[in-house]
Image 1 (spheres, rainbow, N blue to C red):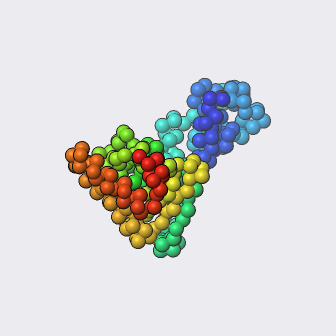
Image 2: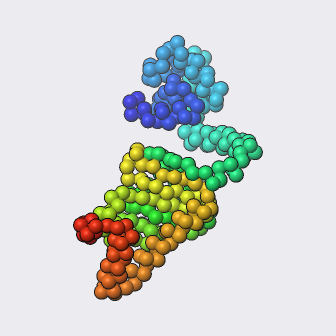
Image 3: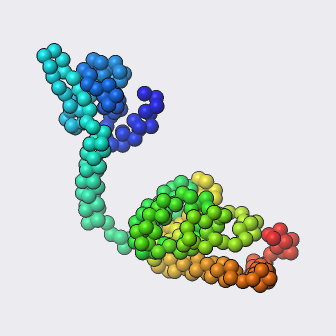
Length: 277
């Protein structure tokens, strides 16, 4: 049963005990069997097997049939098991949603800045926000992170959500995003991957996501913070689109001009400036 360790842990999340899971999985493979045989196959002690089977019968996950001498057990069809748990959890979640919506004051979370630490937690929460988007998503995001939100973003686009923004990478998977020019130049200066994402004009996530578990972003429901982030993304978008339409000589002149503006703004030394190129 070592190969089933991951499945056992998953099924525990459905409210089943480890013995109940082992009994059900072994029944799938060997049914119909009696309690003694199932105990041997599953490793469940004989002193516990009938208690476990009774629990599964009460949950209508296992059924019994009797003849003159023995009682045999067989499992619920796996497809029906999945439907059963989906229905149960849908009912539970509907009740929870109704109750929590009644007591939750959304206004209390507005205009607050919440720090989320750890790249995996950032990605998980971003996927959750994207899955709830209904109108518009704006992004400034790197290839490493787009790979982790690809399916959520793809589904959002299919729902009719408008997606706009800047992509830092070489293999842009979304025509809705504009690939940022001169990525090596950007990395030589910043040396970090930043993320800016706004959702439905309500949520904004901004921060560094290149430090693994030391990554840290700020999440806020603040209209002013959203507007500021949208302006940042749109400005970057305009600069890149304008550069893309120029001829080679015009683009070189334009990029040199932008580099010198940054040099003056950040007060880089000549040595620092030359290292960025």
